[in-house]
Image (tube, rainbow, N blue to C red; front, side):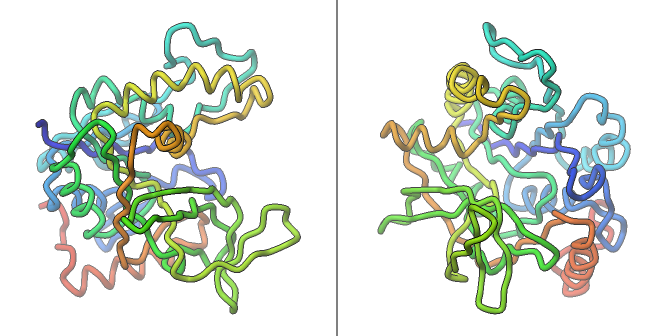
Length: 304
């Protein structure tokens, strides 16, 4: 079996943050959050990464990240573009927004080839253990329906600045995913995490609730499922919302679960997630990464 590939979704501009947050230095020596993901992935066993970007940002990614990291692991680029869609699909007139996370990963199909892969966001800090859990699973995949996800306790994923979106997971007795519901407005409170679906009524969640931070482990066959499912998405979802409908990666996973063709093993890590959903989150991330470096969890400089 081919060695797993790390696939990084980095094409989003981060509208709530106010800029291309993937390029914002947060480490003691100017490292990006993406540096930490690549470093943790490398020591977990990954030897190659495919970064999904907008074509116009390639020069920035190469200069700020790729040229120095590529001395230590293979870095390839894939491009998420509105017209990079399966043959026969039509782009609605006036559409400029990309097609979402499922489409982003599909744009990396050629670079990934027939290897299993781990898919992550570029602007989330996942921690060392998460990459090891995912890599080890991918090295022992049993069949084309053998998927995994690394989940986090919701108490470790909230922002003190504002609301966050998280995929709230329900697990069965075998630690497999039985349901994943996207909650787009979760806040921290003195009573614990709260979510609302209407902006008025809030429901309390247990702090130990497992949530998805979009770290998935897939067999190579997942690329075919993403391609096959896109025309159905275009037919069912786009007519009602032609300018903004998105092809979400968890929706494709859910379709595989509902068809009975897949099972998702959920590995839960106690690590704290860090991210910059809002610009005000940056100071906490800088402090945390500086502390981890001082404790010896990361070398300085990271890429000699």
